[in-house]
Length: 516
Image (cartoon, rainbow, N blue to C red):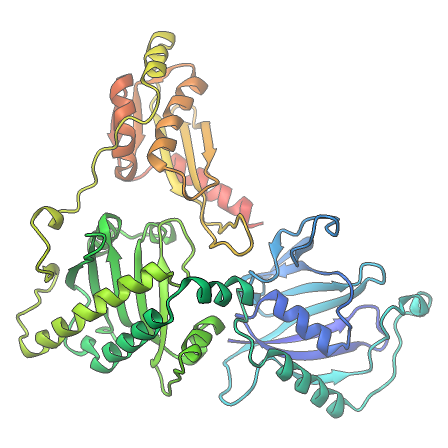
């Protein structure tokens, strides 16, 4: 989508402003560069964005978005890195607004108002300036206007607008990545770590699959199972497109992918948190205006361009607890493995309509044995100190009130480093069901931490917080196998339930607080 922004220099009389059209997927770093060009600033001072109205909600979030600064430059850390945050993450509805401050000595403040959201026009270059009102002040001249306010002259609007657009096109043409990433963070890394031939082969296979259009005779519930010869993991493949909504291929990987797929079949995927458990890879065929700039850059890097609807190739990686992302080299290899085997299978299914049974999994890799066809989640081993558990049994009596013990993702993407893939922390809570209070809490900070170890240690800490060993823990099926070893040692009865109402209420309240 295209955002029409009115950028006005505050305290200017009459108003000095520019109207800008820019993609909603552009980053705040891109917007910073656009404003610099549109107002003829020299980009020689610090700057930051403040959120004033987002999703129709008034805010007062000063300097929350800005560049990553060296320690000696940073008088206060920014909440968000401007290179990682897209405009659509903050500017959601028309009339939403932000402030852009340039030069903290002169404090040139610009109000940025989202006036209109519209479809991208074919043949139009974005970003572009569509209206200019009045000249801009000189750099480092704020002292001149302290008494009078900012007063500037009229200008030849058409000529100034043409000059701005020429400079915008020069600045943005040929950039490797626009919206979410910096050039150094993505494609320079890709050149160092990715085999170009792997990506070229993958795109070739994706085009072959697209031209085949297997969704014309295969439904998404006719699952094809292919085993990776390297990892020996099963990959459950669902052809997308039968419903004429989304076209492509979804691959569910290993145990996590299989159980997510089964929940999908059984209509047990209920909300956005369930989506965060998905482990898989997706190949989509979509419209040009639905791609991010880095998607287009990847295709153009290998000389690919397309015309028409649902023709552009898009790859996405899904890992439990992580934000959807570009494929890494290993995932590109996996998708190539699948497509090489899947293309002849779906071709055979066209000739023999009985080849793929609907509503079930169809195994085709010859190397898949019977044991690997059963994706069972094994009980975890004991990962905490057994001697400490014995001491707890001697030290504490039973706690008779039932306790809800939940573990779930918080829908709040987080980054440790600006270039890292955002992840969703996991919230672990223990709640006394009689008093309806939280008695234990823990928020994970490292997505690579072993969940089984964290959950078992959390049970130990829960006992210490309660000054007693719970007679009964209410848990969900997702955590049962992780907690069982500790529960057995402490003689805790585990009650597996579908929902933990106290936990869900507490998590929703925390998410509301974090959103603001």
